[in-house]
Amino acid sequence: MRVSWSLFLIVSSLFLLSVYSEEVKVNTTTTAAAKTKVEPKHPPVETLKSALCKKCKCDKFKLLLDCSHLGLTEWFKVDEIDTLIYGSIAFETIDLSHNNLTEVPAFPNLRVKNLLLNFNKIDKIADQAFLNLTLLTKLDLSNNKINNNGFIPNIFEGHYSTTEYLPLEYLRELNLADNELHKLREDIFEHCDNLEILSLSRNGFKMFDKDTIHAIEDLHNLKFLDLSYMQLSNLPHEILHASDSLDTVVLTGNLFKKIPADALGNSINLKRLNLDENPIVEVGGDSVFPKLEGLEYLSLSYMSDLKTIGVGAFSNLPNLKTLQISHNQLLTTISVEAFASYDKKNTSIVTYPKLENLYLDSNNLKKLDEKLLYNWQSLQQINLNNNTWDCDDHNTWLVSYFVPFIHNFLGSSMTRNIKCATPADMKDKLVYEVHVQTRDSTVEGTSGGSIVLGIFIGIVVGIPMTFGVLLILRKYRNNTPSVNYNRARFENNFDI
Ligand SMILES: *[C@@H]1O[C@H](CO)[C@@H](O)[C@H](O)[C@H]1NC(C)=O
Ligand SMILES: *[C@@H]1O[C@H](CO)[C@@H](O)[C@H](O)[C@H]1NC(C)=O
Ligand SMILES: *[C@@H]1O[C@H](CO)[C@@H](O)[C@H](O)[C@H]1NC(C)=O
Ligand SMILES: *[C@@H]1O[C@H](CO)[C@@H](O)[C@H](O)[C@H]1NC(C)=O
Ligand SMILES: *[C@@H]1O[C@H](CO)[C@@H](O)[C@H](O)[C@H]1NC(C)=O
Image (tube, rainbow, N blue to C red; front, side, top):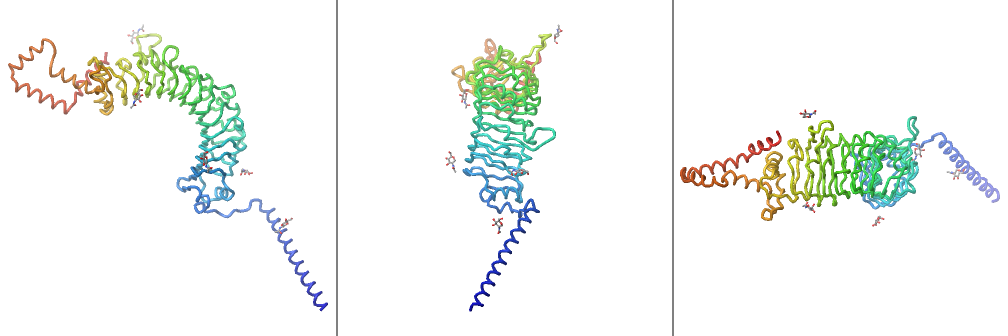
């Protein structure tokens, strides 16, 4: 008995010992293995079969990961991040918009170009959040709660470069609209000074302080700047000075009472400008546009205070092609000299822009003067709808020549809603119809003493002949609706 017991003890302790040593061996081998292999090889992940693509929509053709509108409050989980890093699809666009995210942690190493984080509740962004998105081109942070506390340059820090200071090298477009910023730190863009498109819209800045001006001045490649709805009442003259490539500025919905001419005059390559919804009463006098040789598009619409466009308003815009002056309910006057530009040395030399598109709908205009533009022939589109056109004198240029010209040469649809407001008996009549009636009555009948002659001819030549003439007239009108006649008159007026 004793022997067998001791034998048992020996055997079992030997067994335990061997297990223990086995364990030690395993442990030492794994740690050794971990030491030699620095990066453990991750098994490949079939992206489309992953949990991530069950939660979000994965589009392998557009390389789009769409996680929008999911009410997300949490960031990607570890396995989702593994799918992003090791997955079979390298997404170019990650859309996390319209969720309830409050923070942006640092992204892992991904080949994402477009990152949409708009419409969340983000007020915190990690330092170097985008450092490992080395191809990031477009970042949309609009409609969040970003405020001045957390908005620091470190957020945008990128990798080391010999030419720039830790740049996010490819970032070109940054949308910060609809946040809670009131100013910018002067160094905020020091890691992303290659930005071409920047929106600060709907952040209540009220004014630009020195730091903000410096921040924007850093952006030497800026092309598009959206400063709409920022409660601005003036624009410092340096603000549009920084970039020679700046071609579009949006100043809609601010508190400008005058054209911010000083600042605009510094933006020598400006092509497109929007000043809609500003409380400007008059464009004229000391509030006209400065010399902008390249400006092609200008919009002055939905300005509820605008009454007058005066002498020289657009004289300094020689290459204007599209002008949108719409929905200004008090606008009654556009000076006949709004466009005219007089040569300084010889004032008998006057030049005008060759407008291609003129939109004057929904104002309170009664008259349009033919001398407003020297050459109306370059026009391709015009909208004169919903004004209070005066058709009282049937021979006005507008009624007799211009509206027929639009009808015949630019497209009859463009005259379908140009209506008379006065006199009372013509209210809501189409201007073109008034023209047609007036023309017909001048062709068929005549005035004064010739009526007697008409009756005489009627009697002598006889009624059948008159019918014949009427028949021909009707045919003429149906086939070629007065094209040549109006064209000739129209051009003659401008050959003088
Ligand atoms: C390896 O050793 C560590 C202590 O060094 C211990 O915590 C761990 O549990 C061991 N692993 C195994 C697999 O035994
Ligand atoms: C997200 O926020 C909105 C607005 O506060 C709320 O109505 C909604 O229930 C939230 N969704 C989730 C998933 O938390
Ligand atoms: C970013 O990349 C570096 C170097 O590859 C790495 O050390 C770091 O952990 C990465 N950051 C994140 C958040 O993955
Ligand atoms: C016509 O113009 C008036 C005045 O600007 C405006 O209030 C109204 O909405 C316009 N109507 C249409 C159909 O655009
Ligand atoms: C001014 O220009 C007009 C038209 O080109 C020309 O006929 C006239 O001689 C010029 N006058 C002067 C003083 O140069």
